[in-house]
Length: 194
Image 1 (tube, one colour):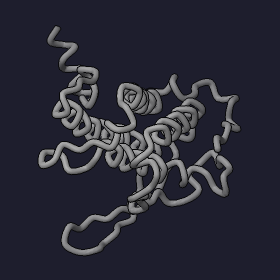
Image 2 (cartoon, one colour; image 1 turned 180 degrees about the vertical axis):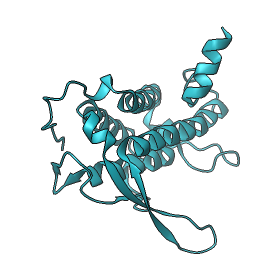
Image 3 (cartoon, rainbow, N blue to C red; image 1 turned 135 degrees about the horizontal axis):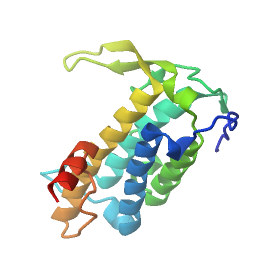
């Protein structure tokens, strides 16, 4: 399941690079949260405040990582560049990851390993993505970006879903790390206030 980097000769990899390190930090926050939950709690919702289960939030954020990862790997092989269009419209609604905390842990661990081996050249690569852009009718738009920009987007989007998961957890009378679900800019602000 894991592809190894063919570009190990490059000086900086994964955790040494700000963008991939930030993604790894976000994913590790998710792992910490999942480790604190039971399988039953993973299926919890806090209706009417939050209508999706914790598992559905994790499935959604993992779908975005899958979109990038799948575009980065052609026929299961790491290409060193984005070989395909990142398709954010592909979702796995109803997938096992929505109901299996262990599957979510496995997928997050997979993405952490992938990001640990990513190179600066790969991060700087130009990419194309496709995503829905209209609320009133189906309309997808192809856009240009870079891999580092898209990884930044999915990490920040994960933080947004972690914030909703935190609401569910608190409404269930449980607690999670204080900084879980907070954006990097918010955390920098809070550090500056101490």
